[in-house]
Length: 146
Image (cartoon, rainbow, N blue to C red; front, side, top):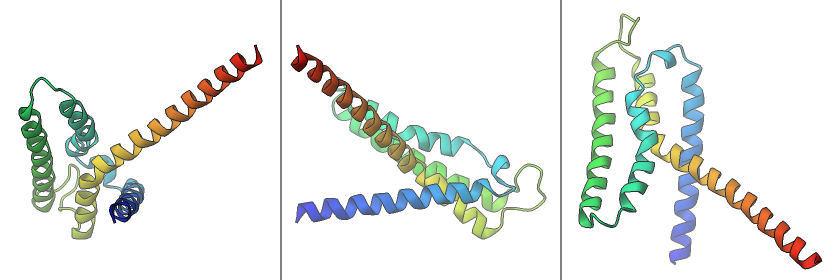
């Protein structure tokens, strides 16, 4: 049963991440992309790395869990505030606020940025693991020849 849960979660993660990548590509094609605030997505991109670092500091014990929860809640608050700001204030250089469908896409993209970071780190890990595996294989082949 546990295997099926993991399989479903992995496929859900892949689906959400692919949707996030497509959403980013769609937003980059719009005229608004350059004018969008970049603070919240940067926080989202850094969030998984910060959580990983915090969770690996063993000296601070339970405090690290509290700090991680506060970081995640802070990110959720930032996305919520960004949503409220985009509802009420026009972007720089525009006289009206973003259209409602565009605002929803922007906020959804901001919310998905941590998942996109995890995907990139996962792909980097696979590539590095493959490189090191090939390197070890080549070293073993050289030792076997001698």
